[in-house]
Length: 62
Image (cartoon, rainbow, N blue to C red; front, side):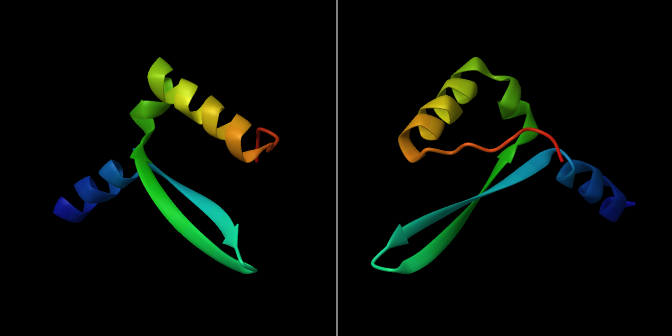
């Protein structure tokens, strides 16, 4: 039963990966944030700033 609760909790977390390039090497970092952050205006503003800073342009959807 504890495993089932753990799986349900895992569904509430989203993983983001970011690739940065320096000197022809690619380093990827993974950030895990709760899905509830996506509805927070301050977090949405931070994502918009990141989009502008790093030029992220990804179509929405699958």
